Each structure stands twice: as structure tokens, then as C-alpha cells.
Amino acid sequence: MSVLVYIESPEGKIKKSGHEVATYAAKTAQILGTEAIGLLIGQAENAAQLGEYGLGRILQIHPSENPDFDAKSWAKLISEVALAQNASVVILTHSANGKSMAGRIAVRLEAGCISGASSLPDPGTSFAVSKSVFSGKAKVNYQIQTSTKVISLMGNTLQPEKTGGPGTVEVLDKKLDTPSVKVVSRQTSTGIVPLPEAELVVSAGRGLKGPENWGIIEDLAQSLGATTACSRPVADSGWRPHHEHVGQTGVAIRPNLYIAAGISGAIQHLAGVNNSKVIVVINKDPEAPFFKAADFGVIGDAFEVVPRLTAAIRKFKQG
Amino acid sequence: MNILVCISKTPDTTSKISFKNNDTEFNAEGITFILNPYDEWYALVRALELVESGGGKVTVLNMGDATNDMIIRKALALGAHEAVRIDGDPADAFTVADNIAAYCKTQMPDAIFLGKETIDFNGSEVGPMLAELLDIPFISYVNHLEQSNGSTQLTREIEGGTETCEVAGPFVLSAAKGLAEQRIPNMKGIMMAKTKPLQVIPALSGTARVTASRFTLPPAKSGVRLVSPDNMDELVRLLHEEAKVI
Image 1 (spheres, one colour):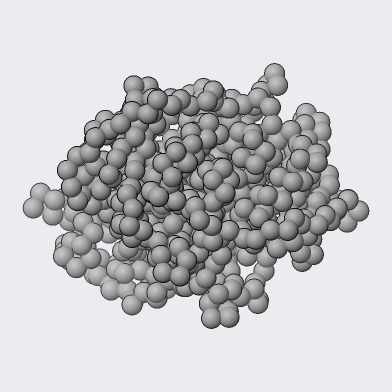
Image 2 (image 1 turned 180 degrees about the vertical axis):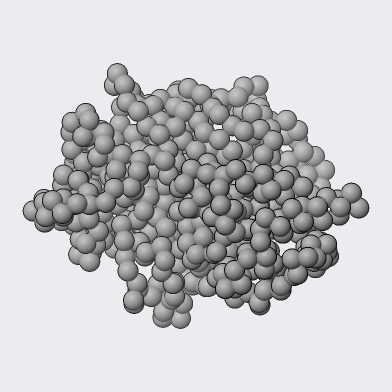
């Protein structure tokens, strides 16, 4: 028996979310009394360091290439490794690619699947894992009834934890099948932490009155090293790009800190953000429903309060 | 092109969520149900657009009991040509995928569209499972799709950006915001929907692989701490010393 964790290495780099799944796999293996094995597909800088997060072995396929993603052939390869390693649990990141593969791997391994898990498994009665449902309005404890389990882990569920020294990387003599889709191009913004992974998020709504006023929000985000987000009306009006829309029909986030300026806090917006650890609401309307869901509130005009907060953070950082 | 659009019934986005039977079951009392927004606004509308310009038909498929016919008629009113309801309990993602795959094996569509997730269980699992059962490609979170010379170009959302890919032959996609614009059904569509075919077929027998044991609501916030708008140094101190988030 073993726990197999696939660790993403986009453009050859392992990100914090990769260290999170490695930590999660190591802890799951500990609960089950077995070993955690890491799997890399493609190049990965500092692959051996994954051992520090508690992975007993690290396997790598295509170590000197950066193969394009294709859910079908990648899921097949991961499933084959899982079978060869006698894995009873397969763990993935709950990312675009991870979500595309979790269900496929579950079918191949005749396994039950939980996507977006937000707790370690409780092996007590049956393998129980909790996840957020109803777009953040509730949580559920799921039990997996099959002997093999597939889990994709929601970002920021736990912090990466180093427990030992580096491991050794073993290259497997296996190959991806010919891809079923052909990747033509990729456009990614560099240097900005994507919203689902962001620990700090600064968001604004219609209270900002127009896209030309977003400078103060960007300044605040920059002072904190935060990612910017917005409410649905803002994205629908074209003030900000759609990928910044957080809420029930946008991105669901769970940062450590969510600062919302000029957002009233409709139930659909709260659904996407109420898994944030700490919520700060800035609104000039003391009756704004968002204050009820907030930890800290500032009743005041965002155009005055936000620049003051930015200045206070810069002063604090210069310390 | 014959496109199968898989649709789900979900609580309205404004619903207050509660549970019953010792928090083991969703409490549907007083809840308004809708066609899952990602299925309706993006998957269904883009499928309709493709058929309107290139020919073929759009079939909508749902798994559930007769109370779901309401959302199926909505999809027909928006322009879908025909509907299939698999009469059974959509107990978990695999049950749903397994049943849809069995239907597809009797008449394979050229493409299968579904929303990126349902807004109740947020699983994103049926699409990839269905694609695996049918042994065809799956492309997630598609926000743009064009067709030319027998191949389909799709743009999908990835972390911090997008990726554009090409696929030939049948595929499954999950639809994200941007793939199409929401449509409102008109009176003619609503009238026509009443006479469009809705085929009800029995479900396969099977057991759920994943079961919900207990639901919980998030703990209520203990109450907001107000900070004076003139004292942002205090807010920074609170975030650093007490909340420990910066």
C-alpha cells in the first residue's frame, strides 16, 4: 500500500501548492501507516527537496522535457504509476489540470473521488474528508466507500511543513501517450499570484464608480503583495477582467486576508469569499450586509480610506 | 453537429442553505430551484449558437426525478431540440457519469458540453469521468470555442492565464464564464418547449462510491470590530498583531 501524490511543475517549477500536496500526502500516509510517494511529470527544479516535506520516494517521468498538458494521456500515466506502486490513495492539486484528471483517474482505478478536499482524511469509520459545498455556504463530510481513493486538495488547506532532509529522485522509464488535444498557445501573466492560490486579496466593487479609479486598489494590493479581485457587477460592466470576479459564479477563494472596498456583500458574493480567514470591509454605508460577515470594518469613503490604509501598510513594512 | 448538453438542477444563487435529519440531508423546503447557471448560460447557449450556424441538433440530458422536468423545459424553451431524462437518483458524480456514458454509447454525440461545476456540490467531476468512460478528450473551463476545417479550437482557463488547444473528433468540455452570453427564453420558445420531445429512460443500477455523512454551516462571525476611518495604523496593528495575517 502507498499514497501517491502528483506534484505539478508548470514550466519546470514546483510551486507552494505543490509543497502543500506533498505535505498533505505525507500526513495522509502517516495516518494510514504507509509511505508517501511523489510523482513528477516533466522538468522540475529542486525535485529532491520534495523529500523535505515527508515524501519517502520521488518518481519522475520525462525529466528533461516540458510536455504539454492533456487530461486523457496524463491521467492514464498517473493511473498506471498508481497501480504499479499499489497506491490506495492518489492525491492531486485542485487546479485546472488536477480537476481535469481527478475524475478520469478515479474511473481508471475504480475509485471514489473527492475534488476540492479541505481536510485530512479521518480514517475512523470510513475515509472521511470534508470539503466546501454550496459555493462556500456550507461544508460536507464525505465518506469514500471504495478501497482506492482519489482526492484533489483545495489550495491553502494546510501550510507546507518540512520534516526531514531531501529525498532522491528516481526516473521512471515510462512515457506519455500521444496527446488527445494539441496545445497551440499559452498566455499567462507572470509575477501575479493567481486568485485561487492567493493568501492576500484586495477586492473592490461598484462603490469605486468606474474602472479609472482602480489605481487606489492596485496601490493597496501592491503595498501588501496581494492579488486584485472584484465583484460580479464590476466584471460584467467590463471594468475589470472576468478572471478577477470572485463570488458564487466566479472564482471561490480562501485567502488569509480578504479586503473588500465598496462591495455591499450580496449573498452570492459572500458565497465565494466566506472561507477567507480574515475579512476586512470598507464601506461608507454602515448598513452594508457585508459588515455582518466581516472581522474588521471601516465605515468610510473608500476613496479616502483605501489610500490611508495603503500609506499605513507602507509605513508598517518599512518598520 | 449533434451536441449533448448535460444539465443539472441547483438551488437558486440567492438561497439560504439549511439541512435536516441531523444535518445529513439538504433541506429543500422553501428553496427555488434553477437550471445550474454554468450549464445554462455558457454550455447550452454556446451549443445552440454552434448548431444555429452550422446545423445539427442540441439534446439536453438530465439525471433525476420528474421534479426536474421544469428545468429541462427551460432548456428546451431556450432552444434545445430534444431532451432526455435518466430517471434515477444522481447519488454521486460517478453514478451520473456512468449513466450518461451508457446513454452516449447508444447514440454518440459529436461533442458533450457541461458547466464547469454545479453551484451546489461544486465537484467538477462528472465531465472528466464521462470523458474517461467514453475514452475521449476532456477540456476544462473553456471560455472560448471556434470551429474550422473539422477541428475545434478551445481556450481554457488555467492558473493565472489561458491555454488554447485544438481537438479533432468527439470531446467533452466544461464551460466557464465567457463562452457565451446568457439568453432569456421568449414566449415562442416557452410555447414550443411544451411540445418538444422529452424521453425518459431508466437508470442503471449501481451504488454510490461517495456518500455525504454530515453537513455543517460555517461558524457565525463573532461580530465585526469597527476601526475608525482616521486610524488606519490601528487596522494594520490589528491585522498584524491579533489576526496575524500580515
